[in-house]
Image 1 (spheres, rainbow, N blue to C red):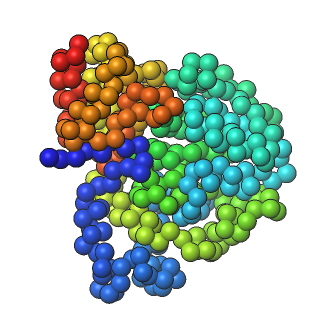
Image 2 (image 1 turned 30 degrees about the vertical axis):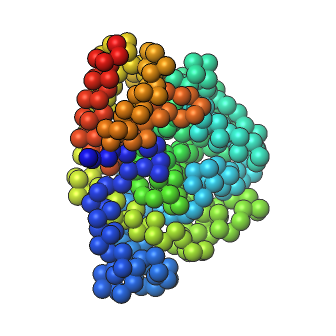
Length: 359
């Protein structure tokens, strides 16, 4: 029986990537070493890291005016690292609050500056992205922070906010590499790797070079973007094996035809699942249709007493990790890049059978 992993993260990886990693586990390209054993300053790993960065730049069309950093700490770590690196002499940060991950960024930002929540969707239980004309931005903010895909609530930006000359900072952890984006519209893009990039432990940071001179004096060297950029992300020992796996994922994405091609697949997968949810009243999704996430699809049963049966029967069918986040309950299907259409089709087939048996 095939197992389809719908976990929100750490999440499913492409089978081809795992097979390649398995083949190279004991001996990377005739080196006689596993990547896990390599010195991060040796020529073998330098080649791995340089190739990974070049392929990521290719996939996302990252210009030479941006640094690409391979760091640690995850997006939650960056919630502190971002203000330490960007505040400079500013006193306020603007945030758009669209859910649990936005709230975590806001909480951490308050430790370093005055926080202005310029817009929030909390009034409707984080079921939409606030329209740009509702945002009440500060006159002199260090930056505007958005979480462009909320994994728990299933809300996604399908547009890029215009915030003028103020740097736009985006936590893209859960949908980076799922679609083409215009990197030039952002001052900083960051995200944990464990959704669409690779295993937990790696954090991607893409930062415009003109923003590298704003760090607070208290910023630790390991978290100082300029110092890490000058050291090619190797001021301290980087997460070497996670970078290696990420590099294989980048190669896999290029082989799929790049981000435009993977976006088409993601649109098709999401449409199939949302069409099933919308086909009647047995299932429901709370998110405004134009703001629904392609990556994370939360849903509930009309009769919540059936939740346990749904989850146990789904697990028995090889449909794993469908339980919703503890803060919202219900179910959640995370359908990242590496989730094949076969997996979504199997889920939809089960959902329709379960509805017929229990309607």
